[in-house]
Image (tube, rainbow, N blue to C red; front, side, top):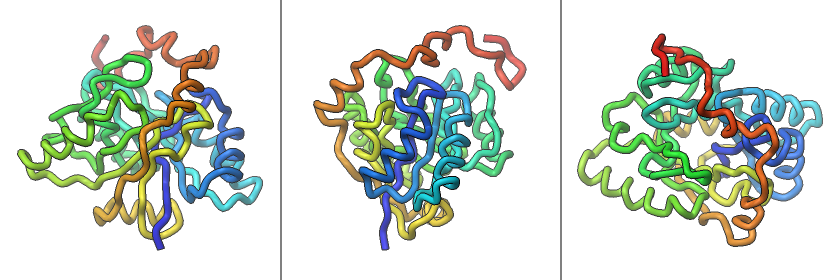
Length: 240
C-alpha cells in the first residue's frame, strides 16, 4: 500500500504558528498522513516534542526528528537526526554532519529563489555535486512554482536522478499535508527505505488561497527570522 508523508513542517520552536503538540493533534484529527518530519530552522526541539506527544497519546502517526539546517549556500533538510546541528558556511559540511548522525540530507526546493518570507534558500545546481539523499521537487509555497520545471530541466541536462519528495513547508495548521510524499509502506522506517530505493513520489497542490491568508498572519513572537542575521558561529570553523 501507499502512504503519505509530509517531510517539511515548522512549529513554534522556530517560525511556525502551531506548537508541536497542536500540530500532531491536528494532523491525527484532520489528515491521512502516516508520517511527518518536523523540520524547524536550526533546532530539533520541535521534532522531539512532537514525537514524544504522539508516542505518549498512542497516535498512529510516525514523527521523524528533523531540522532545516542553515548554510550560506542554501538550506538543507536533515531527516532522522539525533541532535540539533549548528549553522554551516558550506552545504557539503552540513551534509557530512547530517550523515555523521545517521540522517538523510534532502535539498528543499533547490531551484526556489526564495522562501515564504523572502529569504534565498535554494541550493540550485549545486545538487549535482553534493552527496544528497533526495530532493524536494514539490513545495507548498506558490511562489516556488518554477521549482518542478527547473528540476525537470536539471534532470535532462545532468542526468542525476535523486529520489523525489514533496513537502508542504507548512508554518500553520491550514497548510499541513497539502504537498506530500507518496511512499510504499506505512511507517517512518518504510519511508526511509523507500528513499534509499528511489521509490518516492511528490504529490499535492500549492497552498490554497485560504491558507495563504492564514500564512499572512503575524509570525510567532519568537520567530527565528528576527535573529537570523545574528546566528551562531559556523560549525566549519569560519566566521560569518
